[in-house]
Each structure stands twice: as C-alpha cells, then as structure tokens.
Amino acid sequence: MANKSADLRQKDVAALEGEVKELQRAHFGLRMQKATQQLSNTASLRVTRRDVARAKTILAQKRAESSSK
Picture (spheres, rainbow, N blue to C red):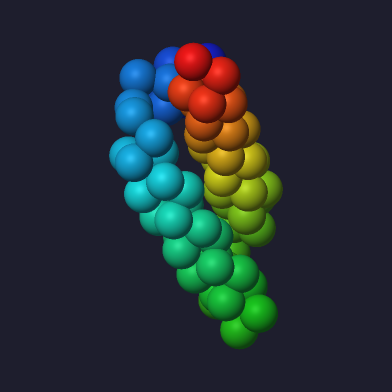
C-alpha cells in the first residue's frame, strides 16, 4: 500500500487527474460486471474504490500545496 502511495506522490497534478479518471473507469467496469453477474472476485471492487480514494486524496493534497505557495 505504501508503494502505491509513493508512486502516486511522484506524479504531477495532470498525471494524477488522468490516474483518477482511469481508476474510476476501471471501477465502473467492475460494477457493471457485478451487475450482470460476470464478476467472480467482488473484492476487486473494494480495492479499486480505495485506489480511487488514495489517488484523489493525494491529488487534493498537491492542489492545496500548490495553491498555498
């Protein structure tokens, strides 16, 4: 987990925004698979949801840091 955070913290704001969009797209795909009962590993929903939250948190921190300067 710390490894994912460290990787995200090295990215700039534009790259983080792209990462958030990509993670949200992946999460949406998993939700659709679950709705059509094609998803066997439902734990992956939790993992992607938390990845989205982690990326959004770091993005918000970077935006706050850049606006305070």
